Image (cartoon, rainbow, N blue to C red; front, side, top):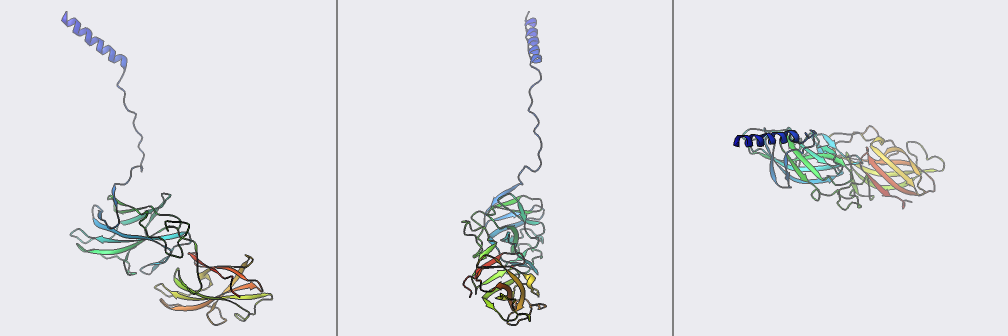
Length: 332
């Protein structure tokens, strides 16, 4: 009798399980590549942390700053276009191993507000020099290095990612850390100081870094004198812009009117035609003159304007870079 009760209970259990069907299972989750954040850690300015597995390197970010100026790396001259600025990164690299190592495989990636990545220029420069750094670091040796990233002119660059090889990354929050764009190119509408003006207000007599050249715009005058053997056309007069150009590069350069991008409008807002680049005190075209590194050269930008109409604004750029804007309405 006891055996029948046990069998009946077992039969009931099996029947119930059969009616219930197979045990419920979780649906398989789809695999999506690239959705996992790179392994790494949050880092801060001045904090020494190690990057790289096979060839570890101690990395310390010392400063970050925005710039519209030039950076020399060896003989390479880096200048931002009007729609760019440079993110200049200064850091120390320290060899914690017992073997010589180099900076190969070290990448610095700036991530802008739209989550677009901008990778640093491939070469590094030793801080305080224009010397490209290619040497090996001896055991325990530490060097101070500068790296440059081209980034958009507008807005804060919120994130910097530092990586060496396939190892874990270092993540820096640059908001409130990166130094502002220097005057006069900082856009006053951006309280963070992170936005660079394409063209900045300027004053005659001041010197501005304009790509390769430091340029001093000394004076703007009207003239009826002959230029290149030509008198001003009837009803016209020349506008002469006196400029001193100093070659800040590391090799000689021959400036011409192609060096400049210019816009001059008169008091009515009409464009004034640019004609030629002339020598500083001679009515001759400024061509085929090799300006050596560190050398100054005086030139004049020559425009042809309607006689009797005043001037408005003059904008000058060098080869698509950031420009300077002068109010020349007081020129008589």
